[in-house]
Length: 115
Length: 112
Image (cartoon, rainbow over all chains, first blue to last red; front, side, top):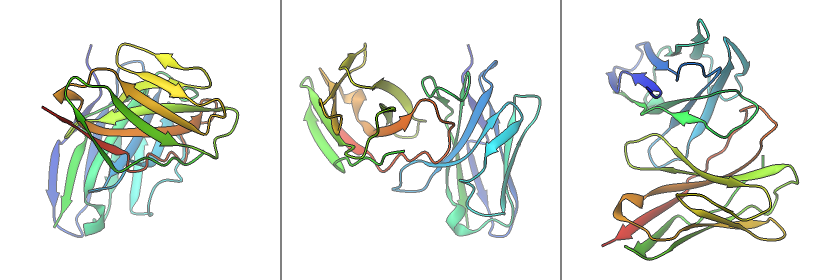
């Protein structure tokens, strides 16, 4: 079956522009997670969804970052007024449910470059 | 969730066992030890996890010390495709996905 997919795979944008990153989780997975990985850094948790609701948004670095999930499936991470420090690989993962961590399947990521 | 400490990098000869250590001295009783790896340009991949007992699967073995303050991931016969960054993560399986901390991991290079 299909895994987690993300689009675009690469995005180059000018500072100050808004960007939208998309994640298609594995069908049937109710939990969805967003992470980012800056160059030379470990993975940084951003937000997770259980269904369409986001119980924990504490990892979002600023109010320029928002995310939504509709229909319990596709999720969009939006970054407004991008800054150069937003440059990173943004990873999405999904799992059957949020209470257990086993089986968190990751997508290939979106490499965002802010110039 | 408890923090972990791993060496920044390690080398291993192809065909030999790769032993990757992890310290988690502040681990609490309900926290599991998980290992993930990330091959260049790919998303992280789950390897193995454990609570107290040593665990083995088709990919690796996990050895957890009796006091649970450290663990070792063992790749029994490393191949070039095992070159990756290996992350040791400690968290409770009962909590939600908040405040996850992967750290910088160990960059394993398997040498021909």
